[in-house]
Image (cartoon, rainbow, N blue to C red; front, side, top):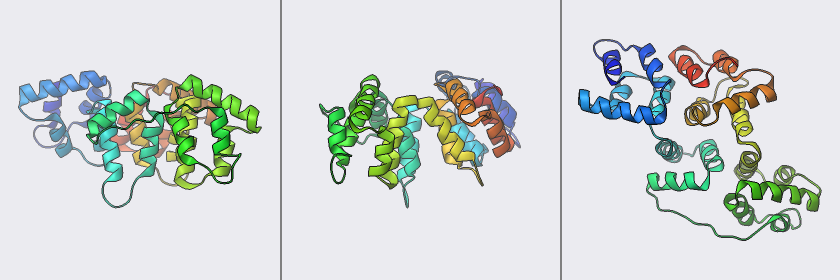
Amino acid sequence: DAQKLHNAMKGAGTNEATIIEILAHRTIAQRQKIKEAFKQSVGKDLLDCLKSELTGNFEKVVVGLMMSAPVYDAYELRNAIKGAGTEEACLIDILASRSNAEKKEIIATYKKGTYTLQLTLGHADIYEAGEARWGTDEVKFLTVLSVRNRNHLLRVFQEYQKISGRDIEDSIKREMSGCLEDVFLAIVKCMKNKPAFFAERLYKSMKGLGTTDSVLIRIMVARAEIDMLDIKAEFLKMYGKTLHSFIKGDTSGDYRKILLELCGGEK
C-alpha cells in the first residue's frame, strides 16, 4: 500500500483514484501502519506528501483519514478555536458526542491538562435548575448531562417528564437560547440516539443552498468505522432519502468519490 501511494504521487500529476482506493478501504489502525511503512521505505512523512499533492476538501478528508481518532478530534478542536472567531458547531459535534473516556484521550492529545466534574445530581435537580426556577442554573444542567452514564440519564429524562410534564428537549428550548441551547440539545440527542444526532447534522449540512463542508467532512471521517451503517439507516428513516444520494447530489469530483466510499453503498 505504501509503495502504491508513493507511485500515485511521484512525477507529474497525482493518481487520486489510487489514493481513494487505498485510504478509504483501510481501518484507522491499518492507515497508521501504512504511514510507518511509507516512512521506512520512502523516507518521507506520508501526511506531508499528501498535503503537498492534494488540495481543497478532498485534501481535508484524506488528512483526516490519516489521523487516529483522538488526534483527529484534537486537530479539529484546535482548528475550530484558533484564529478569529470560533466554529461552535465543531466543539458541539465533538464534545457532546464523545464518551468521557474519549474526551480524556482528546484532552491528553491536546495537552491542555485535564478537568474533572464531580456530582451527585438527578432528575429532581434538573427540574429545580430549569423549569421550577426563574432563570436557569446552566452549570447544574451541564454537570448532570456531562457526567452521568447514558442508561442513568435516559432514566433521568423519563422521570423529568413525569415531574415536569414536558420532554427535556422542550424545556431546554424554552429555558435557553443560542449556543448554550445548541450544546444542551446536542448532549440530550446524543444520549437518546447518537446515530440519529449525526444523521440530522449531516442532513442540515447539505440541505438548502450550499454545503457546510466542515461538518460533512468531520462526521464522515470520524464515524466511518464506528457507526456509519446506523447513521445511514437513521438518515433514511428520518428523511426518506439515502445519505449516499444526498452526498452524491451535493458534492463533486474526487471529494465526492472519497465521501461516497466512506459512506458505503446506496443502501
